Length: 159
Ligand code: PNS
Image (cartoon, rainbow, N blue to C red; front, side, top):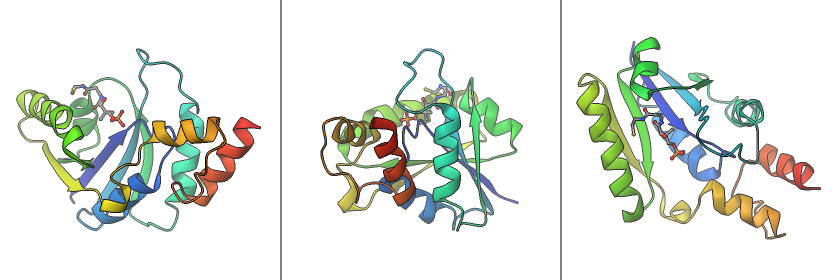
């Protein structure tokens, strides 16, 4: 059984993430979407539990997708989950440097784990969780950028 991991912060999950999840879950038997618990980063807008809940709600139509969280090194988590593939989305050239660095570091410490990049659909190439948070904070429109459940959560969070 081929297991893939799609790791990220997902604060919150966007339609760009959803695009990558929906496409990559067809490439593996099981896709684990894993939210990073990062003690070195600010708390963020949503708690880890809220991010997980939004991901669960938004992916409930995808039968081979599991939602989880992890801390520590991604490759250690991949070993723990018996996963051989890490999925990442590439929006534009701005992502390439950081993504290549992460993939090469991971390859260096765990040669058996492959990072697979999916190029984001053009209509989502500008989209990021931080842009969505900012729009939400300053009353910009974000309804078509995130799943409906996330949109409702954002509205109630910022009320
Ligand atoms: O959504 P993000 O914030 O771009 O995701 C970044 C993530 C979670 C993929 C990355 O920070 C990560 O893998 N962190 C775990 C720590 C790790 O394994 N570091 C070594 C590779 S740089």
